[in-house]
Image (cartoon, rainbow, N blue to C red):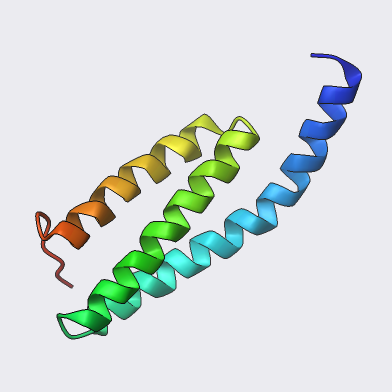
Length: 92
């Protein structure tokens, strides 16, 4: 990798950390909301939100070569897709 690409990756990684923290915070809050939410539309809306958060974090992780974070996010997306489809039940 040349110097220009290294510099770009360094800048991307510097912005990745606070972005990742925001996404993780939103995921945590969303999971707590799901725990408290009644079934139905409210839970579906929250599930969609956290699914998007996991997807966004996965893309950001991919951009900075954080493969472990990307893999974790892919697994979370699968779980949240199961929530959405009803194949995975949600419980406290």
